[in-house]
Length: 582
Image 1: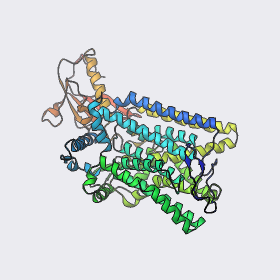
Image 2 (image 1 turned 90 degrees about the vertical axis):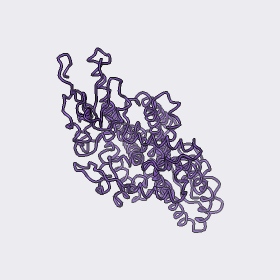
Image 3 (image 1 turned 120 degrees about the vertical axis):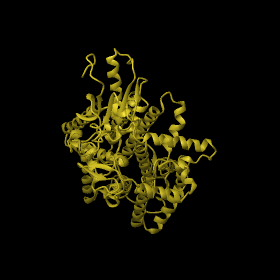
Image 4 (image 1 turned 30 degrees about the horizontal axis):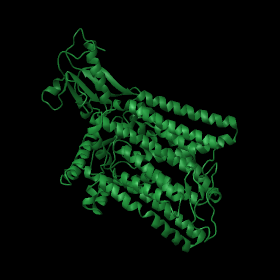
C-alpha cells in the first residue's frame, strides 16, 4: 500500500484500513539511521531529547517574560497598532466603521496579531507596546515549538531538539521575536503549516480529520497575517501530486484515481476553515471574496515602494534589488552552523538519491520531504527570478529561517549518527563540538542583548565586518536602551533624583522608540523650530549615516553591538564644572 502503517515518530497512528486488501503492497518508508528516514533512538534516549526540548521551550518563555521590556518600539509598530484598533472598531461598530480598509496600505495585510493585541491591551497590566512585545515573544516561542515538532516528525526527537536550539540561537529570529510583530508571527505560522501538511502526507490517501482541520486552521491564521501563506497550500499540492504520480507508477492509474478521490473528500474541509479564519481577522477580503486576496497577492509581491537599502557596501533600490540580495543576506545573517548544515543536507540528500536510498526506505519518503525542500528553496528561486521589492535584509523573508534550520538540524543529526557508528569516542567528540558551538552562539547573543537581531555570522566578519556593508539597526531598537541610559546619566548628576529643570531632546531616528519612555523632565522637540536645533541632548542611531553628525555636542553614551555603534547620545548643554564629562 502507498501509506505507512503503525506509529509515527510523534506517537500518532497513521495509515489505516485503506488499500492492503484491494491491491498489491508497495514499499513503505521504514525508520533509518541515514538518508531520509527517521533515526530510531532507544525509548529512554528519545524521552530524554523530548524532555530537553520542552525544557528549552520553558526556558525561552521564562527568558522572554524577564526581558521583553528591554526591547524598543520598531518603526512599523505604530501603524500596525492603529490598524488593529481600527479592525476592532469595525466589529464593535457593527461593521459600520470601515476606516481599517483605507488606512495606508495595511488593508493588503491580515490583521491577526494587531486585532488580537487591540483586544488584549485594555486588560493587560503592561503598556500597549509592552503588551505587543510580550505577545510577539510568545508567538516567537510558538514558532520554535513548531520547528521542534516539525523536525521531530521528519527525523526524530534528537533532530527536533537540535532544530529548536538552532532557531533559538539564531539572532535574526530570536532578536526579532520581541518587536517584529508582522514577520515573526508569519514565520511561526508557516512552520506549523509545514508540520500539519507533512502529517497529512504521512496519512495519505485518507488523512485524519484532525490533521486536515488543524492544517486548515493554521493556514487560515497564517493567511490572516500575510497572503503569502498561499505558498503552504502550494507545497502540499505539489507533494500530493508526487504521491499520486508514484501510486500511478506502482499500482496503476485506477488506484491513483481512487486515492485522489479519497484524499479530496478528506481534505476539502480545510478550505472553508482556512478561508473563514482568514476572513475573521482580515475582513477586507470579504468585501470582494475572490478579487481582494488576488489583489493583495499582486501588490505585496511587487510593493510600490522605492527606498534605498544597503547591500554589500552599496545602496540599492528596494524595487529593483540585485538577484543575489536575498541569497547573500541569508548566507551572512543565519548562524554559520545553519548555513553549513543546509549545504551538508543538500549534499547528503543528493548522495542518498543517487545511491537509490529511496528504494530502501520507500519512494514515498521523498514526498514527505517535498514541502520542506520547497519551503526552503522555492521562495529564493522566485526572488531571483521575479526580484520583488525588498529592504531591511531578510526581514520580509524571515519565514525562511525555520525550514533552513530544520534542514541543518537533520543534517547534524545524520552526521552525529555516522560519528556514533565510528565509535563512542567519535560520537562524543561530535556532541561536544555541537555543545561548544551552542555555547558560543548563546554567549554572542547574550553580549548583544537587546540588539540580537543585528547579528551577522563570521562569514562576513560578524557585526564589525557587516558595518558599512549591510543593514544593522534598521528598527532603531537601540534607541530605547540609549534613552534609558541617558535618563540614568542625568539622574546620577542629581544624586539619583530627577533634575530640578526640564531638558529638551532631539532624536534622529525612530521617535516612537522614545516617545512613550520620556520622564516628565525630558521633552522631545523634534520638528519644533528652532527648539530642535538647540536641544540639550541629541540622540541618534547610526543606521542613517548622516544622523550622528546632524547636531554637534559632547558624546556621552554609546550603544554598540560587537563594538559597532548603533546609537549615540550627545550632551549639548553648556559645560559646567559639576557635571561629569564621561
